[in-house]
Every structure is written in C-alpha cells, then in structure tokens.
Length: 534
Picture 1 (cartoon, one colour):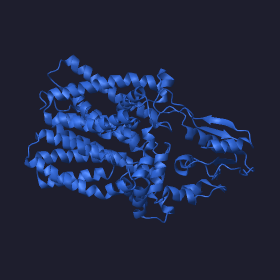
Picture 2 (spheres, helix red, strand yellow):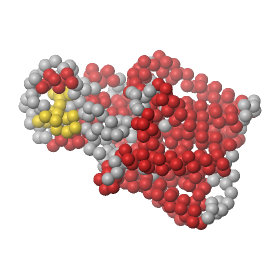
Picture 3 (tube, rainbow, N blue to C red):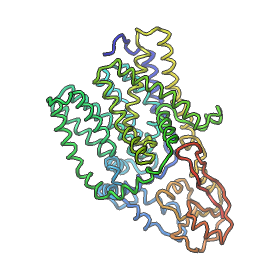
Picture 4 (cartoon, rainbow, N blue to C red):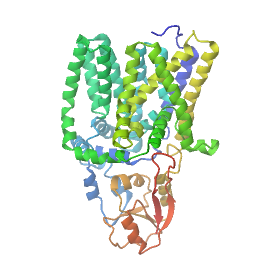
C-alpha cells in the first residue's frame, strides 16, 4: 500500500524517543498543582459514594466550619461507603456517565490513597498506555511502522491528551478503549476468528461502559463494515452482527438506568443546550482542532501580542487546510479499507454533535472532551500525511525537506504550549478566578468566607485550595443572618443576587477580584464572577 518509503531512520527514532520522554514528563509535571475543578470534585464525591443532596444535607449550614469539614466528603478513607455505593451514586446522580472509570478510581484510591496526586496519576498512567495502542492501530490500519511512530510522536505532545492525562475524569480511559476497540475491530475483520471477535466485543463493551459516546464509535464501525462488505451477507458481516448484538445486550442494564433517570441526565447536561451563534461555534470547532496540536497560552499574548481569538482563527485555518489535504491524500493513495475507517471514526461523533447544535441549538460540539473519536481520526490522518511526506523517496528532496520542517513545527508547537502550561496553575496561564481568589483569601490573617452556592461545583474547588486557618460560613438561604464579626477579613464567594442584596443592607461590599470574561469566545461571560469583601 505504501510504496517507495524508507524505514524510520535513526534520527527519527532518536527524536521520537526524546518525544516519548517529554510526553511522560508533561503528563506528570506539577500534576498536583493544576486547579482541581468542579468536574474533578464530582469525581471524588462520587467515588467516595456520596450523593449530591447527601453532601448538601450533611455539611453544616449557618455556622462556622473548617475546610476539612468539607473535604471529608471527598476522601474514601473518611467514608463508610463501598464500591456498590459508588456505582449507585453514578447511576442516580449522572447516568450519562457510565461507571467503569469510577469503579477503577475507587479501587485505585483504596490502594494508593486519595490525594490529588494519587487520583490524577491513574489518568496519567492510562494515558501512557495510549502510546503503544495508537502505534498498534496504525500497524493494523496502514501496515506502516513509520506512520505508527509519527502518530505516537503527535500523541506524546498533544495538549488535549496531556490535559486529560492530568484530569481525574474518564477521558483518558475512553481514549484507550476507543483505540483498543478499533484495533480489535480491524483485527477481527482481518482474521475473522471467534477469538478475535470475542476480543472486539469485550473491548467495545468496556468502551461503552467508560463513556456513553462510544456509541458513535459503534456506529462508525457499523457503517465501515457494511460499506466494506458491500451489504453482502458474508461470514465477516454475520460475525460482526452477532458480536454487535451481544455487545448491545451487555449494555442493556445501564441503558435501563439511563432511561429510568433520563430527567436527571437531561438536567445535568442542559447547559450544553445553551444557544451559541454560528460564528462562535465555528471558532470553537477551530479551537478544538488547535488544541490537538497547540494550546493557546497567555504567554503567546504577553510575548507575541496574539490574543486567543486571533490565534484560534489563524492557526485553526492553517491546520484545517492541512487536515483537508490529509483526507484528500488518504482518499487518493490508500484503499477503501483504510480511508473509510479514518473518515467514519472522525465523522460519526463530530457530525452528530454539530448537527445537534445546528438543528436543536446548543454548544455540544464546542466541548473537545466529547470528540475524542474525531480527535483520534484527525491524528491518524495527520500521521499518514506527515509520515508519507517526510519519508517518500519519490518526492523531490526539497519538497520532502519542506514537509519535514512542517512536521517539526507542528510537534514543536505542542512542546512549546505544554512547556508553558506545565509552569502555570491554569492550563492557559490566565488569572483563574478560583486560583486568584484562594490566594487572596489565604493571605488574610484570620479570614472568613461566606457563600450560599452549590457545595460541589461552587464551594469544593475553592475549598481544595484554602489553608487550614481559613474558616467558612455557608448560608442556607438569603434571609437576614448574623454574620460572625471576629475575623480580620470577611469575603463573599459564589453568592446569589439575593444574598448580596441582603448583605448590602448591612455592609459595604467591595469587589476584590473579578473573573476574566473570555471575550471573543463561545465561553464569554456576560456577568463574570466576583470575589467580594465586606
């Protein structure tokens, strides 16, 4: 299939070895320093076996408490709950999240502890397993070690993979299961043995129980095999249909849970249906493409005067041009069995979410973490393009050198953005609201934090960063309260308008720090959050 190609040269192997070292380093560098966000707080509460309402009811209100009084609901060692409670809570609180990752995380923290480092290390280690997995997938698909090594190189320094590797969420595991199910799918088609189809069925079932959007991978595989077999009732197609039926049956228990708790799932994901303009959606799609290769950081603006919006449009259009050319090259130079796999893997998930946003309104397709089947398809296309161009002997040496320079630029861009991100507490280096607010509060001699916000999303991310001398006063409602006055500094955090209005009758409220608006993006805040001081 790939003619006139050299085997990877020594310098290429050496460079990839360096990139592997960098990829490992970036996945573990300052792993405990990045902001522990609301989604990660949900993870810790869930694996500890607590329900959302249970946490709200058990944490004392209208009295002074310490940060430790809240943290105990996030630690397995302080919980009397068990693994069954973790599954039950996942089913009731967020049925749209299938339970495999949370089961693994529960077992992991029981063995290695429930510190931030421990729980994030699970995702980082899983992310490392994706390196051999994508190499194996390239061997199955392209029959080319060169393309496989280029794919590994792209993944090692891909910002979007590194972000998820340092995030205690299911997405690194989802990436791994997508790769494994795709490997065993192609292998089963090639060998057409019962053992191969069995491995495919197991890997796809695990993927479905890792993240619900694995159904899009299932759909991509179905479209692919029907097209390859030309809708003929071949033995391969029959084996696939039998395997698919068994996989679907294996998912019925969780499907019934999703149906029974559909209103909860719909409520938990309703924010993704918030309307966005078409221009903002296009910009978000380009940003998702950029994040695969280079992540915008505030240093780009500080040193190069390039805003996030301009960066997204310029770099995104350049990468989109390369992607379209990569798809064209795949279509022209590879058999249908190759290009159709990449096309279906890339298109099934992204087209479904884009269509939903355009027809029903929303911003589902703006969330890169929902699009990892497409991300992997794009990386496969780029791996083929770059692997083809940098080693093809039939190309003019000057043209080949140009493509080698392009490859170096793409990989260096990832290294650069990861280097910047690894040194800052937020991924983009901006003054994150929680990071800055916690710093201001911790500097006070004897501070008190007042809030009536949601415990898990509103309080816990801040609470994780508060020093032990800080005290909190969580208000149950906005009626007039006697605020403790024996504190050097009293701050108002994540408060409702009603509470602010009530406190303004008793105190003068001064803004201490305000969140950035993210102007010019789909996530622009019309009313950014503010830390107030009484």
